[in-house]
Amino acid sequence: MRCAFSRWGLPGNMRVDNGSPWGSKGDFPTELGFWLIGLGVDMIWNTPSRPQENGVVERSQGTGNRWCEPGTCQSPTELQARLEAMDRLHREVYPYRERLSRLAYYPGLVHSGRPYSEPSEPDLWVWNRVTTHLSGYVGVRRVNKNGYVSIYNRAYYVGERFQGQDLYVTFDPETNEWVFSDASGRELRHKPAREVTPERVMALDVTGRP
Image 1 (tube, rainbow, N blue to C red):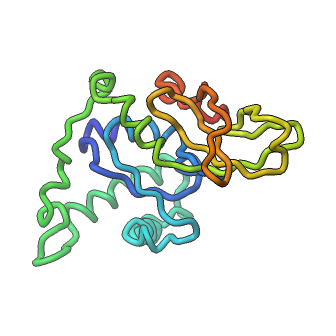
Image 2: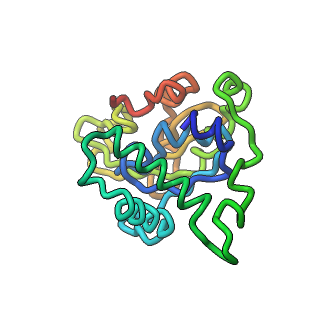
């Protein structure tokens, strides 16, 4: 993505599905989503099992499959070369509207107007964007028999007396803490969100999975 952003510029937003590494079965964003949010890219997650919400991309992939015939390629290198040639043809040559190619009809495709380079990333990336975004989520966790719940594959103790109950989990951007509340909205526990830090996000290590 860094190579793509260096060439085309940072996008204003990205529409993605819920499969790895974009989404997860959990109810909070993945580290890759956090990284993009920190760069100022708005994330749009498709509704699960609704590929039609990203119909343009799905159709484009179908076009690439038909034009490039992956089954006839002798190597990944050959397939990559075909895909790149197809992409240029589809964008720059093939008529789209008024006998113009997509690139000619939409000259803004050349660059988003939001410059990016890897050396400049520390200046572009803003931690506050991540914490503000995360604060808008509400997760639900059931307390196990030992009084623990799991967030990003890490156990948090909230108390054995809550075992079997569903607690609501939110993030406090001011204190960088998880806040655990019951169904009535009463706050029960505050715990430091030790997996949500700039260092872990940049290392793509929020979930603790490779």
